Amino acid sequence: MVTLLYIWTEPVLSPSPKRNIEKLCVSRSVITANVSSMKNTARYIIDTCVDQDQCFGWGDRQRAIATTYLISLLSNRKFGIYMTNPCRLENFLVPNRVNWIVNKNELDGLCAKDVYMYYDEAQNFRQHKMIESADFNKLFPEDIVYFHTAQDYVAAIRRNRLTADMIPWLHRYTIGKAYGYIMRHLFTLNNGTRQTVTDVFYKHVKDCKLVCAHIRMGDPWSKEAKTPQSELPLIWNFLNIYNNVSKYKIYVATDSNETKAQAIKHFRYQIVDTEGIIDQMERSKSCDVFRRVIVEQEILTRCDVLMLTQSSLGIIAAFMRNTNMGLYCFFEKRVFPYAQHKPKEENNNKSIKTVLKENNTKKYSTNQHTIPDNILI
Image 1 (spheres, helix red, strand yellow):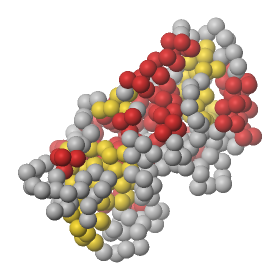
Image 2 (image 1 turned 120 degrees about the horizontal axis):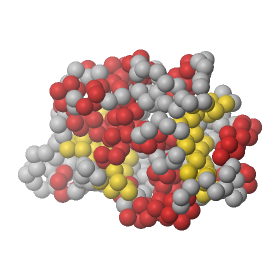
Image 3 (image 1 turned 90 degrees about the vertical axis):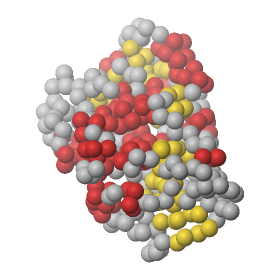
Image 4 (image 1 turned 180 degrees about the vertical axis):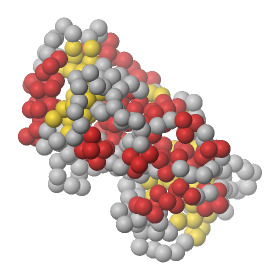
């Protein structure tokens, strides 16, 4: 007897050219295979990122995890994460308040469906509208739903009519605060990763303030640079404000070896670094790259001053940091504090680039250090 998989290819959620639902009796080799009983009556939502999936970077994966976790709450199901691309997530992070590690024996005899929700510009509006109105237990009656996605549907889930009863706290939080809560609620560093982060602060930062910049340079699928090399001197000029060796240490997280080398050259007496290969998770199959990204984001959450470029990893780090003080953005060739404004529901589905461009027309005082935490790229 084998697990029954329903591969869902309805075009609202999947860019697949198929237009039908295929029911396949096959072994799910990634988690469970031969089964012999129907004893388990629990139902599951499992965020899935395996070798053949387009999981993208860690920030994209965090968006997927937040979305999938909220869907599990909305459908009153057990939540799980199965991430093996490029290696197991448990190598770096372990459960905190929610045990998201699912034992394969729990899944014996259960019927499962794979759901693929990747970005499709033509279907994006329909995807959000579907999420807003869906009853997920009716939409997915199977015992196990394996979600494969890199999308952010948190705002759409908050507008779902069932959320007020099933997830009441989501209406009390901005999108940013919801992300910060979910990430801290689900994850804590494992012993090895925690020791690496602890060593950075106890051995290198010590009693100094830590000034950080997260500089996203490129995208493996685009020739357009996120942060052009020609604009790096503007970022170095901002960091030079903190050139007091006795008071400040500087940490630069980046996906570029060249950018890291420039940072070390400019701030050789203040620079703090972490070990590991520098690369983009989207194209790397290295566990060392995955580990470094996890460590980098955790350090960013603890910075006294944090400057961001356009990156979901950086903005989620800011949400996990849980304070707006000392938070800056580099956009259109200048560094400025995040704007202070009241949360606007219409911003929830805008990219950070759009919102920042709108805010960039405003006047900023040097004392403004607040982030529009109701938005997320």
